Amino acid sequence: GQAINDARGHLSGLLATAVQRDALDDVLSGEERQRLLAFLQVYGDLSQELAYEGSLRSGHQESLSHPGALPTSAQPIALE
Image (tube, rainbow, N blue to C red):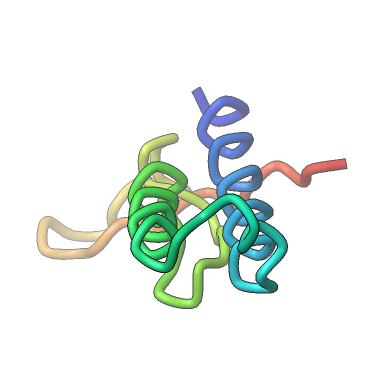
């Protein structure tokens, strides 16, 4: 569960950083670059800034205090 989702998130974030730094410009067109970034954001559950901050796909941190409360994602496992 969490290890798999966190690995997807961290790897997606690393690849998004490489794309943003133009490291793949010799193999990606502008359209492919935008499509890849959009895919990575969904696949890795990245933030608007394309950073991985944890995912609700792995469950949430604690029990909800009341029925209308929004869940908080668990702290991601560090990629080390």
